[in-house]
Image (cartoon, rainbow, N blue to C red; front, side):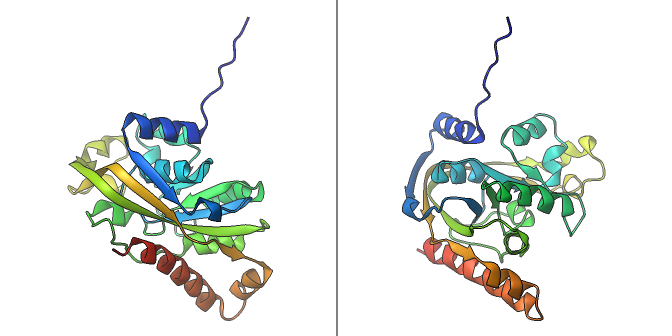
Length: 240
C-alpha cells in the first residue's frame, strides 16, 4: 500500500524556516491585504525577505528569483519547493517569467518581486535605504488581465539583524562558467534577521483605465508614475 505524503506549502516552509532561525516577526496593516490577485513588492536586503513577506501575508507567493539560483544544486530544489519563478539569463524582455507570472495572477494567486533588482543585493546597505525601483512589476501588473488586481507595497523594517561573512560567489563558478555573477571576486552579503516588522501599505489597484493608458502615447509616463508611487509608499514606511 502506497502512502502519499503531503508536501508542505511554500507558506508552511517559510514559517518553519523563520521559527528555526528564531526570527521575531510583527506585522501591521494586515487589514489592507486584498483578496484575489496580488503583485507584492518590497524592499530587499536579505535572502530571508521572501519568507518574511509570505509569513506577513499568510499566503503562498510566487517570487521572481535570479537565474543563478537555478544553477546551484540544493538551491535549485529549494526555489522550486518555494514556488519561485526564475528569471532568464541575460534577457531584458523576460517573456517566460511574464507568461508564468500572468498565469498565477489570472488564477487569483500572489506574485512577488523585489523592484530594487539583483545588483542591489550584492552591496551592503542600511535597513532604511532603497535603490531606485526597476519597472518590471509595473509592466507585469499593467499587462495582466487579472481582475481585480492590486499592487501591494510592503516595507520590511529591520529592528535587529546579524551580518554573517559574505558568500564568495566565485566558488560557484564551476556550476555555470558563463554566469556573470559567478565571475566576480566580490562577496554576496548575508543578512540574518532577528527582529523584523513588516508594514503593509494601502494597495494600489489596477483597472482597465490604467491598462489603456499604459498602451497609449503616454505609456512611459504612466509606468513611471506607478513605479514612483509604489516606491514612495514603501520609503515613507521605512523612514525613521
